[in-house]
Length: 73
Image (cartoon, rainbow, N blue to C red; front, side):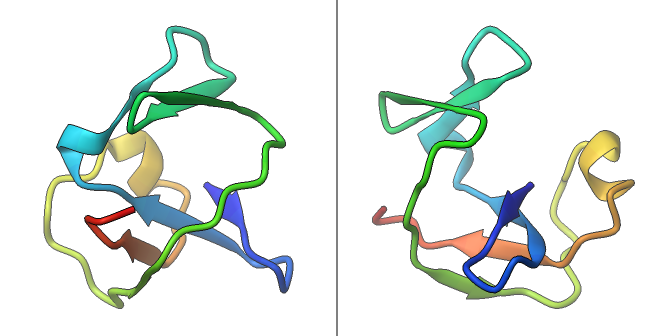
C-alpha cells in the first residue's frame, strides 16, 4: 500500500511487467529502480473502484481502493 498526499492509504496496481519484489519485505523494484519503505514515489493513474483482475489475497485483504498506475510510469 502507499499513502497519498492527503494521508489516505491506497492499493497501487502496477502493470505486472514493471514491478517486482526487492527480495526483502521492505521494498519493491519498479522499472529497475529499488524503492524501500518510506521512499517517496510519484505516479499517474486513477482509481478503479471495483477491480476484478488478479490481486494477491494478502493485498485484497487490506480492503483498500485499487489505484491503477498508468503503464508509462
